[in-house]
Length: 406
Image (cartoon, rainbow, N blue to C red; front, side, top):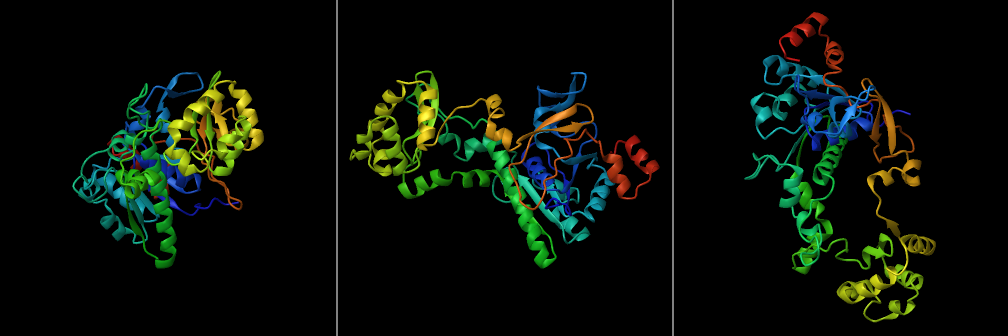
């Protein structure tokens, strides 16, 4: 079965995380992604380590874990975009490309003649996606941004972490670069939507994706808590602001998570812990009342759950159908039987490492395959191959290499 995007060619001018995450999604879906990198240096994330990918002799390669996590399925070429020849090669590549993805500072590619307006003259069917911290317009448009900064500015850290009056209280960032990753997903979605629209109009589109916009959108229920409740949301640790009981609980030998999503599940939980009368208590009979009276409910549940080990409660809760689980380490995640069954970890052939581990896309299709046969590329691994496809002779390619254009 052919991958869904096997007829799509992507020219990826992006670096670091949000843009490469978007192009990796497109590559997994079958697109031919050509990653353009700086000669001799490449994507910044190649040097973001340790850890680094190790070769077959156990020695560090030049590629850090960040790069290996976000560049599967791509072909790497090196081009110096500051040169006239490098710029002309980009324009040549765009003649039969479907997508250009970039995350340069606003105005940079326009100065090089590689912005949407310029490249759409070369190829009117081109879908061009710009990923930036703050978007193409507005008072901050020219400012640089990183995930950590946007987590803070976009309100996420204000609702993440323990309460100020508890040990460890204070704002926290999420343990993965969630804004970068989410921005990549939105960028990929915008690109696919523009490609779909192109089938109707025959023309390309410009897609403007901003990390701050994405983070504001991700505030979701917390934003609506403020907009409807007129109260600024605060950090609540692991406790959900709108649904209770739903948080971490300390058992006799460690913590578990219990996620009660409705009143029926609360009734079942009360039966499991041997306190059925709690479900009939006027203070706790509905979710709204449990949220309002959480300070009274919490110590009752804490005392009961602390009386038995985790395995005891997890087994009883599972049998009763109450969502609950342990807090797994990253190592334990990849040992989970469900994760193993779904094939989320695979090892792909790599020219230096032999095999490289890859955490796979969560997308699955009934009538189409994913493309999972190409490991993250070495710097410039495919430069000669791609330029030869454009019709350049070996001698001309070597001339470009000698002059450090590639």
